[in-house]
Image 1: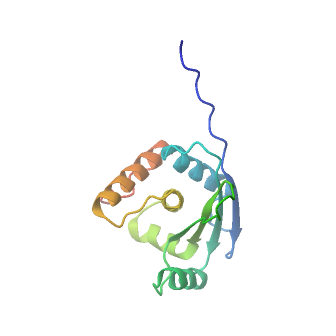
Image 2: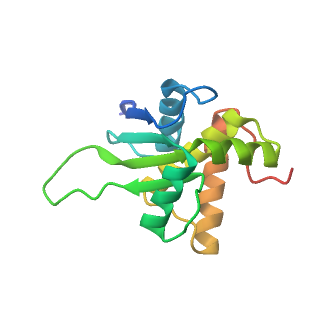
Length: 162
């Protein structure tokens, strides 16, 4: 008897908030597409909810300092949800993406800004799912997965030499 195809996972629930003017920042629909691609690439089939906050340098620096002990604004910070036992919600966590850092990095690296936004959204979402890059083997696996996910979106390998 042939197996019936599994139903596609539900689209992620997403909220996007802005601490900066929205000009030059991708639409919530784009962020939803990128989060969905990361979830699919990581083979997550359960419902997922993500909150994304687009921050300025001051907020990005404060978050990085307060939560990671690093006193500078970075491109993306991931805050996986830590739900109490027995609380069964689809929340996987929050992302803080620093718009000025994304713009600066895209220019410095010769990348299309939209592609860099997509990469950082995918990267952050994978962190929410438990992927990391502290060890070389983890970094290689995570980068390979990011590259496959981005390729499915028509985006070139972000780790390829420019």
